[in-house]
Image (cartoon, rainbow, N blue to C red):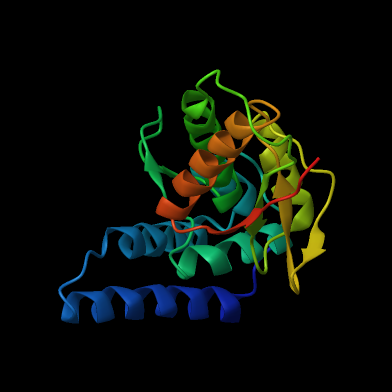
Length: 197
């Protein structure tokens, strides 16, 4: 069975504890950090990373995967509470990305009016996710019912070109705009890719 070193585990526990104290001083919510602290303490007591990761993340993590995901948890970027049979669980930022893409996709469909005049185009959304796993992003996009072949370099940035369809002319643009707007509201970094077909 793989193990996280005692030194690293203690460092993570101390970081979580520090985050709780710091947020309390700022009169900010500490729920996420307290959840992190509780999980880490349980891991230290049980020393069973497979059982703990399955309990809170609904899948088994290797030590490397745990460490990669936990770095994100400590940054507060992918801590989401949801109701489950075991109580609160944490979902990864990739799972949350899928849910947000699904919502944005639905918004894009609702924006279509049926008036599809104007210039035929290939308007799409360019989604920028710095420091994320390309493989996991592509899986998240596919799970949302969308398509993206690979990461693309555009305008000096690395990102993911996503088309929602919706038509060939103005309806396609409306769908793209609604899709991008929804993601922006969720604080994702996006750009409009405009191209005449």
